[in-house]
Image (cartoon, rainbow, N blue to C red):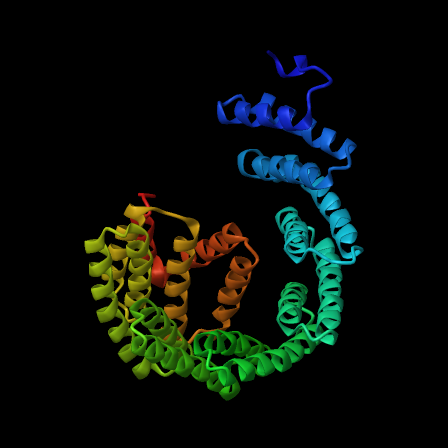
Length: 393
């Protein structure tokens, strides 16, 4: 049946399904026409989310396979629909923050692809304002955890538009909130969570003061709490938790320029992880083996044992592969490079990638890290080995 022969009563869901089957089978032109028809049907039904999703798909496909010019109308249509969805969402009594995150990020992604800097600035500022207002509301009601989450989104959007006044104002709010959160976590002896909070707090200290003694002090506090958490886990017989916290401590020490302690902690983490991996392998627990192999690779990168790291990374991928692993190995490599070369401006890239991961946008985090690492001639050799492990060569 030709795509034009579909009955008028065919649902957009059915049209979409047939369209994607056509694209997958190589009948791309017919498939995209069907997907476009499905998008239009969704819009007619006021199902704007599915309509936007399909317009975005067509735009992204044409960007990759044809040209930005051909993709532009579909991407802008998607952005328009997502903007409407943003306004609709924030008018609800209970805002779905997960949905709002996806809508706002999709809008800015479109303008990044189309190169519309004016719209990027306009809507980056608008979204920053939206999240800041939401943060004020949650903070006033005493919900500090949610307030921190939405202020972090406001911070991200203000960073995109480069509004220093707004960036520092939101960073100040986050300093206050995370200061209280860390205090509560330390008091309750939740050392691992406290360390995570100190790690995040350091980001906002850096936004206000730069990479100075304030930042180093907070990051070192994160490292010490990770180390304390590892000792607590060890005393409780939790070797998994011990190793996880040791690797986190290793990287926090690296970022606070305590290289001696970072190396010592990293070596201890590597020794323990070899034992844990061996134990899980003997038990036939592939999932746990894979997770600890990734941690082992991270720890080895942190002590500059790149060949060994790639070897164990490949072993993890041979069990199963996902994008989160690829992000983790690249974050480890970038953080190690930053610490070794003291190129702390690159922490901005780490922070953006970690934000994308926290907002369930792993593809964007991965694309950003790949782009940065490919541009770095000093990391060319190890980056190529990582790609080889992933089967790209």
